[in-house]
Image (cartoon, rainbow, N blue to C red):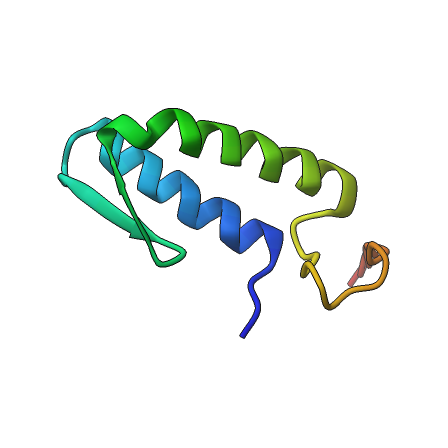
Length: 78
């Protein structure tokens, strides 16, 4: 199943956090093995995802949605 931009970003942040704290020697993300020396690449990927989230929203699924989905807020008063 395809992941939303928000899910991708959350997984990337988890990998960055674990590698920064040196809790793990390496981390697999998107089928690629990342190590501590790969952090600059992961930071760049995070910047790209942040820009996409800002433009399309966290719920956007690349390749499946043809345009950004409108976010609708509903307020219910009891």
